[in-house]
Image (cartoon, rainbow over the protein chains, first blue to last red):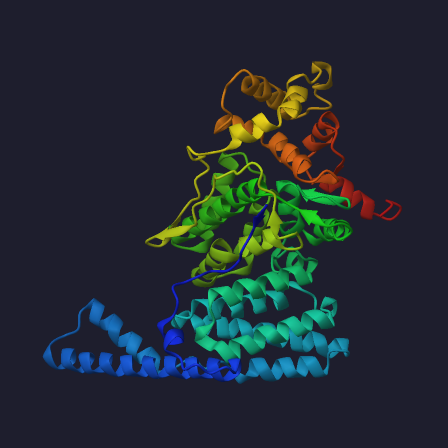
Length: 200
Length: 275
């Protein structure tokens, strides 16, 4: 038998290797995250120095323009709209009230859809995968068919996008997606809701 | 070999139907599948991967290559007609819905990218045992999808030279003897509508006469390979399929089957249909 692994294994990160030997996982994760942020800022400052030099000397070419937009994106980090979290909190509060549940599920679909569009401007592939998958849940599944267990899974997904932001990775997406699939939520337009909206 | 309670073995048609078919059918199927442990194989995974990924890649590349989504949709429909695919065939039916869902190319392409690079596998693995049978040691469809500029390169269906299917079939000679001796009177238009069993019989005779099944012959007898591997891997297996060929194949090879048609599932859900 072949044991199938969903894990995507990139080369080991140098940031993790350089992280201090802190035993507490939470603290270690925060240190790794901050080390990563400091590295990003250092790199951005180096890039900016290059950019200023280029601008002073000549008109930037295509490669240099790309460098400029990369550096700019570091100074314009992705802001995840608070409306996603607040709407989800309302959904949790009103979960037993079906009419309000329908309102909040629809509102969440709209917030996630808008944010998915905004993410097109950024190089944040896996964050965008999380966001579009969560949007699909609210697009394809009737609000009243969502169970409490599934709601818990959706909460994990929302928390992940706020916690990991652009550091969402393929491994965590693959694992999360399989959990959603196994929970019975439809992630493809195969439901009556989807058929009504998009046709047979 | 695994041994124990009765379990389902999901063939490629069941694997595709359980996630890609409309909920009227898929929810019936998933309810049934939840009654027993479900197993599958690397051989079926490879067939599934070829089916789903190559269709998704085709849609992706047509969109990249078209000025608008309307143009892409019309090109896809024409192409599918040309190669004899029906609009309700999976996964094409679902891709047609995506065209109604998306009005712009970038989010549509991202959706397909996510499906091609990751999601297909969890749709396949959902609700089955994660250890896949692998007596056949099939090594087709091994390449991962990759992009050449903006287009994906399709997954090749060619088998590699180090395919081990000869060794597997040699080890299952008694089943091949049975298949090569199927009574021709059973292979009429009623029992073998698509002529699949006739092809399997010819391929089994050819193999016993010394022809390697690697490549084309393997595709012709793929249903038999799936069934023989399932039985050899798990004695209490029940073959689960949405393909009527497995009814006769199961009878011939003495393997219990659970074969449905979409029509039968929909009728069972009608009032008085006996759900």
